Structure formats: structure tokens, C-alpha cells
Length: 208
Length: 208
DNA sequence: TGGACTGATTTACCCACGTTAAGTTGATGA
DNA sequence: TCATCAACTTAACGTGGGTAAATCAGTCCA
Image (cartoon, rainbow over the protein chains, first blue to last red):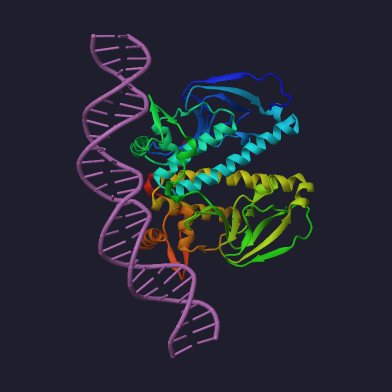
């Protein structure tokens, strides 16, 4: 990927534009250069559950290298600039390119396990602070931390990640603001001291 | 796997015995010939969340072929008889063996996405009936349906899969029995008409 | 300038589920 | 025969988070 592939084309997606539709065969993956996206499932009653969050620097979706069919739809949560990486070029490219994608796939796999634990066993407060902590840690790994850490998700988006209603997300996030753990700037949320956000919550660091 | 590997050794595990411990390097995977197992995470307060369920016929855990370290512990939920498949033999074996494991890995990956949707958006009733329906469908695919479909999990185990307390699982399951959707035989649960168990619940078949 | 959106905010009410605490039942075994 | 243990059961009670319905604040655009 960084490895010896030529100039790949840049793609732009507007917020709410789809990068992929469930059921479609995929002939490429994307690296997000700017902006955020997600994989999601819609319920018949219109509710949405987000099953994966893609941050700037992430590859979306690495599993297409193995099984090049999108099981679920991918949509941009903000305006997005992405590098398009044809699967054909990957499969023939250096082992390094493939193994980077396999690594990303396994990371996503383990992250999904962690989310099952959060959704199954954590309170609203714990899920939200865990989400903010995860976001910070992932941005850091991707070399994308701006000071301070800003989160361009609507409260509705957050609700759809953590499995709550937007009303209750607002309650929790407003309380976090009262405690000084987050700040609002217009509609975006800022986490001024990300290292503190996930301490003490529920007594719920993981173990075992 | 069925493909040209020699006689692999059989292993037996008692209920509650570990097949793998989190953090350990793995030099083999297992195919469950008899019995059920799970991957789980323990919280500091002692609560447990099961993140994957392995049924008779399943391979456990296919991702070890790619990344041969167990992230989480695997434990037997019933007595287990398993075929031990050394990873060394796999990596050098026919493509067929490898691709069967890759298929299983992607199936588990997609199943995890589905569970995130269930835990995030379904009621207790919906999660439990969806679990029973999934179990039936998987047993069927593995060619392991006995008539009728019996589920050898304790209510505590079920609670740890669906993210509820055992007390509430008991309430839901007792109500299902009142409705004739399940039967009890001693401590094991029987689903007499699996095709009906997941209809009408919450209006919550998935879509999108 | 003023609708028409989209998203955030807040309130009041309520119920699904958790908590706690007794039970009961059946299997095992000295 | 009784003790023990694991699992299931039931009840009373409390609460975290859902529901519904307004209102408010930006932003876009005619």
C-alpha cells in the first residue's frame, strides 16, 4: 500500500454519501485521508446500528481483500477524501501490502469483540467514555491527533455506535461537560484530556 | 482439513476446562466433534461476556491461522471431544484446508457484526429468540441437528452471551415456555419448532 | 427577510431490566 | 440418609434508559 503501488486516484465523498452498498461486489478498498465513515445495519423500523467506525488513516474495509463482497453498507459520516486502492493491484503486489491489510482485518476483528463486551456489559456512561477513549487512541496510532482531540460525530451518530437513543446520549454527554471531561464547540465534541476520560467509569476496565 | 491431512489426535476437555488462555501462542486449532465452547472476556467485577460461541462441527478459532496468538480465553461449556489440527500442517497443506479456515474466519467476523446489532438494538426477548434461531441454523449447516433441537447451555451461559442477568433470562425463557415456543427437559432447553422461534419478535428481522 | 431544515436540548412519564434475597429442585457422594 | 452444591425459580423493589413532545439554535437558500 505504501509499498510499491503507483499513483492511486483520490476519491471524494460528501457526508451521507455511500462508499459501498451491502451486497455489492467490491473491486477496491479505500484509505481514508480525511473524514470519517462507518459500516451500519438498518432495522425495519428505521433504527440504525453502526458496526464499525472508520477514522482518518483507516483502511476501509480490509476484509474485501479476502472476500470481495460488501456484506453491509458503508457511508461517509463527514465529507471524505479517500485513496482508492484497486484489489487487483493488491493481490499481485508485494506481501507487505497484503499483510498490512490482514493486520487491519485482525485489528477490526478484535475491536468487534471488544464492542460486544461494551454493549453487553457496560452502562451508557461507560460505553460513551470508552468510545471517546478508543477514538483518541486510534487517532494517535494513525498519527492524526490534533490538539485537542475533536470528534466530528453528531449525537445521533454516537447513539448509533453505542446502542442508545440520542436523547440519552445527550444526557450523558451534557453531564460529562458539567464534569469538565468534554467541551462543546458548536456541534462538535472536544476531549481536552483524553487520558482522563475513561478512568473510574463503572470500575470497568477489562480483564481476563 | 478434510483434505489430505493424516490422522489428527483427538482431545477431550471437561466442562469448564480451557482450550486456550488469553495471551498464549497457539500452535493448533480445534474442530469440535462433540460439545460446545466459547470465547469470553471477564470484567474486574467478575461478570463475564461471551464474544463467540462454538458449536459441534465448528472450528475454533480460525483466526489463529493468521495470527497465532489467542487474544481471549476459550473454555468448554460442555464436555468436549475435539480434533486437534496443528497449524504447521495447515500452512503447508493444500489451499483447500487454508481456504476452509479463511471462510470460517469471515463467517465469524460477520456473525460478530450481527451480534453488535442484537446487543445494541434488540430487547431481551429479541436477543434470546435470535440466539436460539442462530443456533438452530448453525447446527443445521454443520449437519448436527438432532430432532428436536436441544441447547445444552445453562441460563447463566445464555445470559453471558446476550448481555443480560440470569434472573432476567429466566423470566424470558419461562415466558417462552408458557407460549409453547420452547420446552425444558431437566436443565436443557428444547426448541420444538425452530422455524417459529424468531418470527414476530419486536418486528426485528434485519434489513439494509 | 423569512421559511425550512437539521441537530441539540430539555421535560415528564414509564417500563424493561437489574438487584437482592429467598426459596426449590435435582444430582452427587460420603 | 443426610449434606452439599449447582442451577433454576419467584418475589419485591429500584433505576437506567426509552418515549413523546416541545423548544431552541444554526444554516441554507429563495
